[in-house]
Image (cartoon, rainbow, N blue to C red; front, side):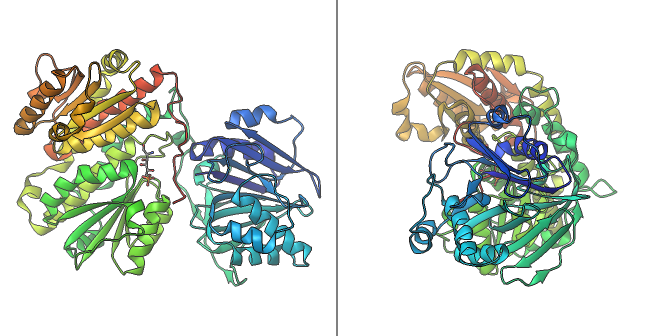
Length: 604
Ligand code: M6R
């Protein structure tokens, strides 16, 4: 939520800030702003409600300077407006600040320190920059004022602060919100993620919680809030600029859907040894072997991927698996088994709700494994172990390739543990072959885009609501399919266990309500779901069936090429991703940036 970018040095700051904000836009896109210094006490502050394109249209060609900070906002305190857009300024406008996170004690700060101040908007951020300004007025140096403010401020934050009177320095600090330093030659940068800096540099430096960084064009000093200097190595990121472009695609979501066969193959190569056998770090395998219960904690799509993986994890590792919603578990930890292992699933590795659970788990001494797409992300750094998804950057807000990669990665883990335990089902499960078949099944579905588009246009054109139904793993896919449809097309959609409908929800079925039924290759479950289709059809529902081709009937709508039952969720979800995509296109909505959402949810 919210993206920050800053640069100091020998570069054109406006250009860097604007292209950085464009790359960060997926983090929040209700308003944006930049501050560019044109010399001591000469700066330009430009803000706009709406997208980065709206901000760009407000820029004059003459905004030039080599220090600046920028921000793209996902509103928490106060609506999307120019006065609430960042950067914010102090009472005298000497200090300029951007912030990602939530300052929990901002009202107390306002009352205790800033009662005589006038504020322009309603944000918590404005209080932070006023506080720094106030302490400087009282006689502290800028650095001491910033440190003093950091000791007082509680909550989550990534800050970048500029003193307009001395614009050759950017002051940076973070707690719980992501922030990274980009190291250049004659310039340095700060940003919410590497993707927004990769055009300028591939050398980065991590900042940890409660650290303060002072950036000039040729120096980076890291310290704790008490001023103790800290050593920090830089590292080179493997990101490629082409990974983060849309290429010829109209939307990132479609590109990411299409990338899924490649991701399956990348996962095979990342997790096989020279003999072509699945291999996972011994320490991770041992961590699972030592556990008497696996707890999967995640949010949204990642939570659904956990469900889709529960069955094979239990069958292959002989360990019970329990699922938890991160935002619930962070503060309501249930009674745990004696030797738990927590698996955190998170595409971004930055989700604040999941991080809160991880913090608790670490305090409790529970071993943890993070399954993430982003190496070096907070959840990766703070967990005992990490497994990477190798899916490449996922930029569309609606998660697609991360979901399928999460299931495949957990299958790899389950297979490795099962093999180590001598589990007979694991021995029979030739995962390398099965994942190759999954890649082919995905390709076969992708080649049916026109058919799927046509079905969607008939079924979902004007509806306000819809249901996905299924049993077993298909029920878990129904949960994910309905999240995908509602988050981007705004069609209210529920994912339902097919057999549960008749226990209440079937009362919502009336003439014309779309019901999308998922039937993968399990004869018994299939026949029961077919029965449930009859029940809703008899009440006027418009049914669309998505069926494994091995058991499909003449009149089924979409066929999915058969894969191993452990991996059916991967194959079955692909048509539902395309359904969400085409339904959204048909409604003329922005597929990649649905309203009210942001890609990386870094506030609780
Ligand atoms: O980065 P994470 O996987 O931790 O994100 C969790 C959810 O916010 C995320 O999966 C969200 O539900 C998706 N954008 C839905 O498509």
